[in-house]
Image (tube, rainbow, N blue to C red; front, top):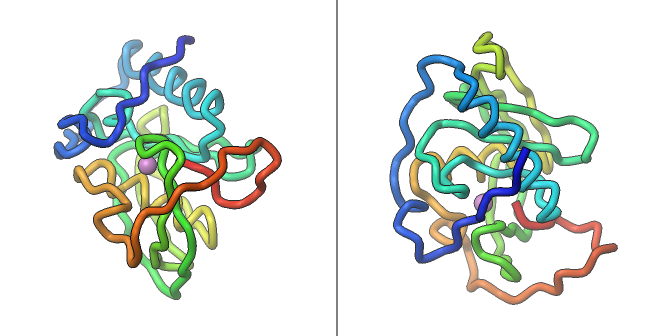
Length: 164
Ligand code: NI
């Protein structure tokens, strides 16, 4: 495993649409492992492949650092409810803004063995799924934020929504 460089806002690759994953390869498995390592190293709860410069429809999420999720070719098939709160992103370090998201989503995707699964998320997990899927379309949370970006303190015992 290896850390990959996280692309930051302004990098064109974050604005491109990602391609579907057709088959699992050693290269893609390594990418997924590296994405987890890179996300944990940066104290994030989610990371999308374009954030490490790869235009594939792959997302990793772990909102409680106990439940690593791999989402390949993910599609939201159900959403309801609403939550409004601060959101951040590893590609916009030190910043956050208010974003309204569904409070509950069901996402259909493939796991790392290319088996179809459904992931149900509430609260933070629903927010993370929506945020990461937007990355696959070249959308950043600042595009859908309700207020201006503001600076946040990057401190370790902050248990609020951290970057993802
Ligand atoms: Ni992000």
